[in-house]
Structure formats: C-alpha cells, structure tokens
Length: 273
Image (tube, rainbow, N blue to C red; front, side):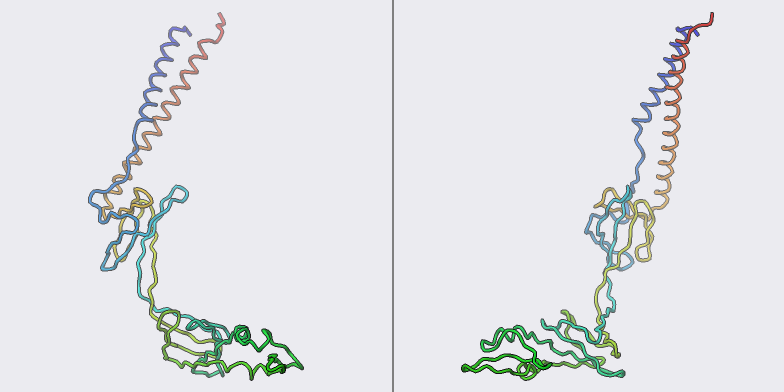
C-alpha cells in the first residue's frame, strides 16, 4: 500500500477518533432535579405529611449509594419486666424484687442495705463482718470491751414497699403502672414516645405516612421529596440515552485508533515485489 494513501487513511481515522474523544469527554451527563418539589429539606428540617410531623435526620453514602432517614416520634405503650429476685434502682437506692406465691397479685421491693457504708460510719464497729459457727456477726468495741453482735440485730430492718396490680409509682423519672404480676416477674407499663424511622434511597420511591414520594439527594445533608414521578422517569430516560450514545462514541473512538494503528503497520510491511 502506498504510504501516501496510508497517510490519508490514518489522518481520517485520527480525525474521527479525536472528534469522538472530544464529544465523549466534554459531554455532560444529565442530572436529576425537580422544579417546585413538595419538600426541599436540609438535615434537621421538619415536614408535615398527612397531618403527622417528620424530621429529615440526615443521610450517608455507602458503596456509592446515598441512603437517608426520615423520622417521626409517636406515642406508644411501653413496658418493662422485673424478674423475681432481681435488683432494681428506685429513688436512688437499690431494691430487691420479691414475689411471694404462685398466685401473687402484688410485688414487693425490699431495700438493699449498704452494709459496708453502715459499718464505715460506725467508729465502734469493724468495717467487715465475721462468721462464727455459721452465723454472721459485727465486731463492736465500746468502753474497752469487744463484743459480737449478730448481723440481724446490728443492721436496721430494710424498708419494704408493696405494689399491687394497677398501682402507680414513680420509676426512672416517669409514672408507671403495675400491669401484671406472676410468680416469675412483675410487668410495668407506661405511655412513652418512640422514634419510627423510614429509610430513603437516592432516586427511589418512598412512602411517608400515606403519601408516596420520589427522593433525591443533592448531597448527604439535602433531601428533595417530589410527587412528580413523570419528571423522574423522563430524566432517567434521558440519562439512559446519554449513556447509550456515550458507549457508542467510545466504541467509534477505539475502533478509529485501532484502524490508524493497523494502517500504519501495513504501510511499513516489506513489499514482496
């Protein structure tokens, strides 16, 4: 093949490859945006949907996908169980839960005495009890006389409180009601607030309350909610067309460059004649 002809072909394919390369690298991928969205929120903003208040709690990016959370507080009945023999804290003190009998209708709280503190506050008593013949004693020294006082006599009688079913008490900074008592445990109930979270994924539909939206994140701290699903579908179709055209242009550019190299190689092949 004459080198002049090769030069023409090479120039042609380089021109085509360069032109397609410029188109591929300069073309901007269409993005998703909404005119007049239903809600345009920053992290921490509130929104009202179907008479309920929600809060955009923020978002994070995981494996290239943005996922956010929309939260709502609601009133709910909550409960806690006190197992028989367990220890609970009430009024800044520790109490032992005691339920007597298979058919008990009440639960008792027995004060847990801080024996160490009581002994340390008594200058006449040793700071530890001792055991003699299977009995527990406190060593008390008074008037140069040391005597052993049975622990049951030395320590005060622990306070005891009893609560029947439907009784109310202040526990953990709230008013609770004894809802049920069995041989194994007592159940407390109260009305509290719980947070319900709804996951929001980039450019996907999400139902908040009874309303369906499409969610879009400009970044992890900005959320747009829109009910304009036709706009989303049209924009996604435009993005698909752009990607298809870009793939075609890449193939043309690669084929052009390969063709240029092939013609150059053919030009320098030794002639048989």
